[in-house]
Length: 342
Image (cartoon, rainbow, N blue to C red; front, side, top):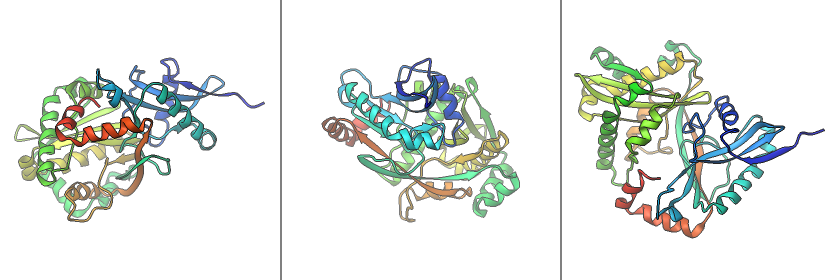
């Protein structure tokens, strides 16, 4: 007799089982908190009181007055299932259930962020993304051989220059919050100087305090000339560690190659921790050398990972709300405000 399969809303009681399943998966969900929070929205597939699948995201834009337009759910993964059979049988039903509930709750859209790893989901506004991934079950010597020679020289330069890579978790990370925000902002300003359309959305201190305290988050800090010269924030989820965000002091990095050294140390650290895959985070899709973000693409490629494309985008729940929100976000001053709220 086949066990009954139910689709149930996420609850504090069911969440730990779903989180455990996510952490056993390949790609996981890098922004999923390790404890239940009221800002989560999702449906779970439950078989005989056992969670066997689910799709959970974070409600953002749920701010006074504007939430009628801005309230959306951000997903950092596709639906996750215990087995491929469950995925084949129930993914469509799970997505349909989520859409119906989102409509009842006044959600404008589902945003499949650039942390989603996969292909083939039906979306209304497609946004193809790309990354570089390195398989880590190799010796450090073999990982080093995969790094491009120019980048190996940069790593050696950082080491010889005495760059210190500090590995931080929890409260130790929060000590560097001001430097982290400062270097992210400098990196954004440098990017906008090259490309007026570039945008690294700057999150609030509270957002990063919460993220830094997550047990799966590690902050790598590069120090040169007794100054914080570069920062790199990594998040482990499932069997993968993701390069979530970072920034550098342009002059110090140029002088000491701090970024290259710190990223290499992060790769070695992840390998030593038994992580299977290092994900470099988003890069432009197959850019030409004239692309304003080609430098980011080339930097991440240089550490030897395989190039992979994936499908993200937006599933629109309310088309008129989405059109209005899209217009608001096209206004740069408004975008700067909403970047800390969405």
